[in-house]
Amino acid sequence: MEYLTLFLGAVVVNNFVLTKFLGLCIFFGVSKNLSASVGMGMAVTAVMVMSSALAWLVYHFILFPFGLTFMTTAVFVLLIASFVQLLEMVIKKHAPALYNMWGIYLLLIATNCIVLSVPLLNIESNYGFLLSLVNAVGSGLGFALAIILMASCREKLRLADVPKSLEGIGIAFILAGMLALAFLGFSGMI
Amino acid sequence: MKNYWQIFKKGIVAENPIFVLALSLCPALAVTSSATTALTMGLSVMFVISMNNIVVSLTRKVVNPKVRVPVYITSIATIVTVVQLVLQAYAPDLYDALGIYLALIVVFAIILARAESFASKNKVIPSFFDGFGMGTGFCVALVIIGIIRELLGAGSIFGVKILGDWYNAPLIMILPAGGFILIGYLVAGWKILTTHMEKKQAERGEA
Image (cartoon, rainbow over all chains, first blue to last red; front, side, top):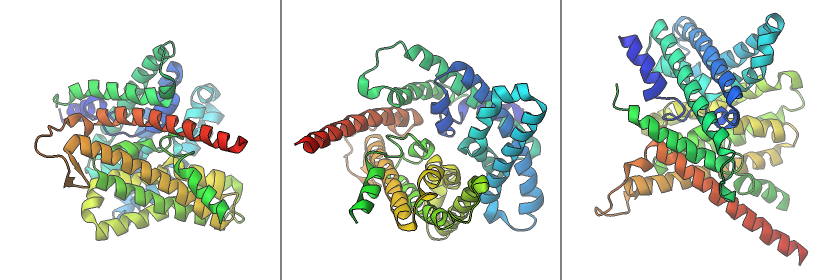
C-alpha cells in the first residue's frame, strides 16, 4: 500500500513539472512536438530509475559511512553526468536503432534538474532502496504524462491566433498554468 | 570601461536569462512565492555564475576541450557546495526554505551556457562582468516575480504587510498555477518593452 501511495503521489499529486517546477527546460524545449515528447518522457524515466539506484548505492555505501555527506550534490551530479555519457556510448555501440531514436535526448538529460533532484529527494526523505525506485518510476511517468499532455495542447495551439507578444514561450507558460490548475484537482486525493 | 558596462547590461535586459533566453526556469517558479527567498536564490546564483566564469576563464588554456563539460560541472558543484555550507551555517531558515532548489543550482543551464559561450573564450575581467550581468538579470527577474506573487498572494512584500485586512488574498498566486500564468504575461511584457527600446535606439541611431 505504501508503495502504491508513493507511486500515485509521484505521478499525479506531486507531479514534478506542474507542482515542483522541475525539468522545465526540457518541458518547454521539447514539447513543441508530440513524438519527441513521448521519446523524451521515456528516456527521462529510464535514466531517472537507473541513476536513482546508482545514487542510492553510492550514498549509503560510500558517502554516508565515510562522513562525506556534504559532498552529495557534487558527487551526484558527476555520477549522473558520467553515467548518462556511458549509457550513450553503450547504446550507440550495441543498439544503434535505439540510439537513433533516443540518442539526442540522452545528452540533454545529462545535466538536468529533474534527473538530479529525484536521487537527492530520495536521500532527503530517507527512502529505502525499493521505495527510491518506486519514487523514481512514478516521477518519471509523471514527467512523461505532463510533457505529452503539453505537447498535444501545443500542437493544437499552432493553428490558434495568439497575440503577437505572447507568441512562443509566453503562451506556453500560460498553458502550463492551466495544466497546473487542472492537476490541482488531484491534491486532495492522498 | 564602457565595454564592461555593455557586457554587464546585456545580461539584464536584452538577454535576460529568464524572460528572454527562458533558461533555468525551475527556480524562477519554485522559490518565488515570497520575495525574500527569491532574493536569496538570485544572490546565490549571481555569486555562483560570477565565480564560475572567473574559474573557467582562468583555466581556459589548460583544459582540454574534450573534457571541458565535466570540468565546468566540477567547478560549479564546488562553488555551489560552498554556498550551501555558508547558508546552512549563517541563515538556516533560508536554507530550509530554498531546500532542494539550492543544490539544483549545479545544473542550471544558464551557468553552463555562460561558461561555454563566453568565459571559455574571453579574458578574466570581461568574463566576470558577463557572469555578474547575467546573474544580476537573473536576480532582478526573480525578485520582480517574487514581489508580484507575494504582494498579490499574501498582501505583503519581504514579509512586511502592505495591503490591509480588507485585501482578500487569492491563494492562486502562491500556488504553482499562478506562477506559471504570471511568468507567461511577464515574458510578453518584457518582449514589448525590449522591442520598444530597440525601436527607440534605432531612431536615435539614424538621427
